Image (cartoon, helix red, strand yellow):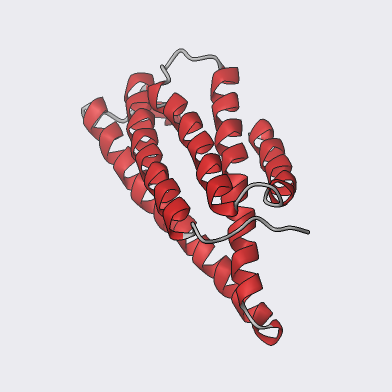
Length: 168
């Protein structure tokens, strides 16, 4: 996961700089399209894939998420009066964490159901997983996540289309 963390850090720093020249809705949409590409790799990965392929895919997902995370936080804080900035920041963080938790819970449940179905209910001893069942579960969850991210990309691009690039 180290490549993904580095990609996130780079994306968080570069996104506001790019937003000076590229309209934020397009930057967010393009970033999410990059994340969809990374998620699409995970959706097709095989049980024998090299770890570098998985690490690179997660790095691409994280790289693409930077504009969404960074710029929407700026939109939220920038739209609040200065005396309410703390409240706006806390609502942003709380809703973000709730969204992450719900996403993990829902997609995790789907993944577990697919794994159980693919493994025939067999639970290997010693904490091991059945590779093919796990891979099918991972592919399914990544496909759903890619579709959802594509929808969010379209929603963000269209709903924020009037937001202009910053000229600082």
